[in-house]
Length: 349
Image 1 (cartoon, rainbow, N blue to C red):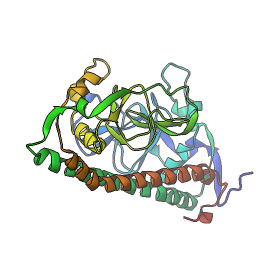
Image 2: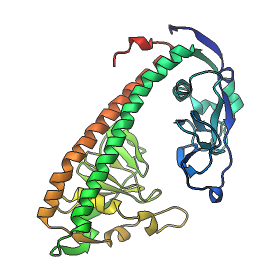
Image 3: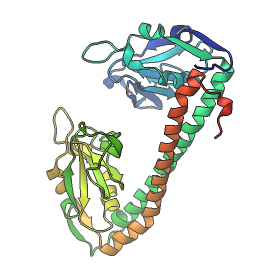
Image 4: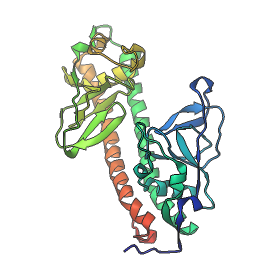
């Protein structure tokens, strides 16, 4: 039995917040700026003008359903979204976390493309605590997200430092004695495989958007560079743990020692999207990748580069492990805090 601590109120969700449909903004009318544009799957670009003042909470109305986003600054929600127009005195960050606990699939229509009627969501019976309890809950959960954000920012900085070292060693100051060749001299490009029949497990499955799920066994267990075959072609990734790669994602096997991180920075610096070989769907081919011209550094130069950037990659991996643990802890606490099952003051962080 749930033990509500504090003053909790029961009622329809529409009594606590008002959801509103987002606004049209055709691609040709968008102007680059500082205002984030939210689609049903998250930030999809920027614009010069905001339609809604921060703080904001956004979720998918059409297309991608179930994701909830928090906007800390003024934003433009597209018409594929619903956003909270009025919080009715409730804490915005608490509402963000609360909406993440809803089972959004039960609000969807039965059409080919999932869609949500906001009036149906408004009629959902919910229980919310008083404003002070809301703020304590939101503050507790935000501590996890803030640390994850800091880890992400640190990793971005480390990534930039590693890229700067790569540029200095191999782009700005190459050794004239180094040989010239093609990317195929350094790697073997391999096709990913379908993962749908695999049971859940501990090994990450990578698609062009990142980790999709975790499965029972890996496809490859050595250092590798992942390159999208379909979709977002510029989303190149470096992996140094056993993994599975989906069939829309190439993975690579290294032909030389200490070359994986060099290959990663080499490929990442290229605009793969401009090499698109597809029509309707952006596509990359093994022929295009293999034919890329590259200066092949000496074994000693590759070893030196590895020694300089390896500690950075180890730090990034440690931050990723910590962020994953924090995310799991937050997600475990989230429904229990939102239901009043546990008191926020009992949590030891």
